[in-house]
Length: 72
Length: 546
Image 1 (cartoon, helix red, strand yellow):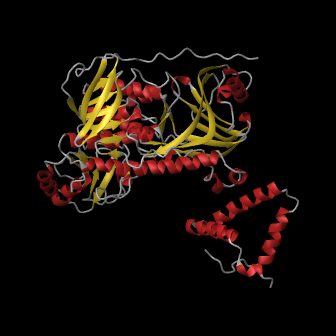
Image 2: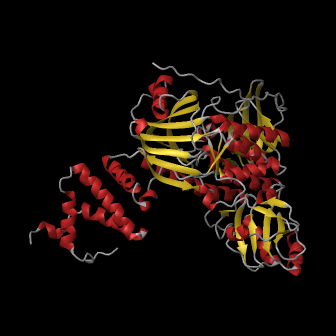
Image 3: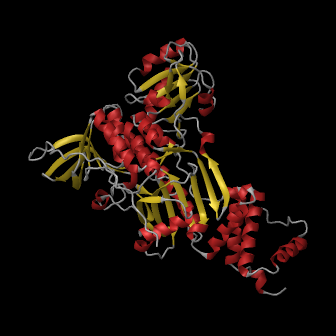
């Protein structure tokens, strides 16, 4: 699993991502994100990496990262 | 309000109760093999043994086939089961009465989102699937068992208690004419999901019950539809819930409707309610009649061990899975075929008791795999949370546009002949060998099942051996349950024509190599440089001789 920066234009990707959610209800947003996950998963195509990503997503949500608790 | 009619009830055969010889006798007779339960697994085992020339006692509490008359139960028989039926001698009847199919389509609402053709990977004489009501399978097996004449088939004989002994099992039996006691060297429990033997022995099956509810409608109508397996993830004519549609024998369609979890099962299976559902599906002008309507919920269980001393558990007595993919009845039939040759060799003194341990070592992992596969289908079909609904919606939405997502649509992964894990008796693991059509050197047709049909022998398929190799090996293996056959070459052995499909199916064996095929048509090993000693060792390994 790649955890170092790998997205060429992070701000551009983020802007496109939130822009795609504009005007969607909460349920529609959830549907959109689920479709996006599947499309991205197929780009990856590596079972071990996919399972690592699922685990990493669970871990990032479970424990708050210490550095976030003190404002920079 | 429309009224709905039922077809006349099936007239199923029944067989007479014959007072067994042990009744009224104080001497306790010992039988080598006693099978309890004349369902698909128990009957297959009895028939398999009889085909090998081995006697068994088969006890059943009923005197007919089918559990509740002509009611539903299993309908889809997979290729491996059909190949077993071919070896046992009932395949022709099954094929004639049943519906052959290999193509399945899955729909979401009105749109097809996935399809499969199981024929693509098949090299067998038998098709990927035949659909037929389970009672016909049982009926044909009983007829065949009676024809073979080696099974003591005792109807209306209910087992009330079993007692494990150090070297066997004592069995108490109740009949309309009184009670009696027998002993068995080996007892096989094929009494099904609610096994009273398992319960009496206090063996935990780790059951779990689903809250998903379904209603079966077996129905006859005159609307031409392709003989394909159709499933809907969310059918417009079933309030957005799943539906299954399959053709069985006698022009009867099995249509299976997913119901709300909290439904009143008595209400949803009333003819008026089921009829209204069907009317919406078929449209206003199609005449139909019901054969059977019944609600069900599914469950699963799995024993920790399929062998407890001299008692072996097969079929639903050992494992139950949800019905998606036809992995229940087929795995019971394949349990029986896995155990049959092993019991036969042990009963004939040609293999040691350790061979029976390999039944558990092979069939329990198969059951674990079937449980995992069917549980995933069940979860796809009955999402448990709003988030799971969201994920499934994403799969279905993408599947209609993009091929990759179709692989995620899961309305059941059809039964396969499970591969067996590597083990001391099976160093490379075991995979099925399909029933390939072959030819003897003189052009006479043969099939792998015909080559395995008589007695209980492994096949050594030897690719182009030399005459010297064959002669040397013949002496060494004469005392083993092994039949050496050449594929091509001029060796003096009985010789089959080289065949491209056979070579491909076995992984293109090099000239001189030997493929050892077990009596249940699983590949045991491939010897690249066979010698008399290595062939003999491979057979001893496969028979778990230690």
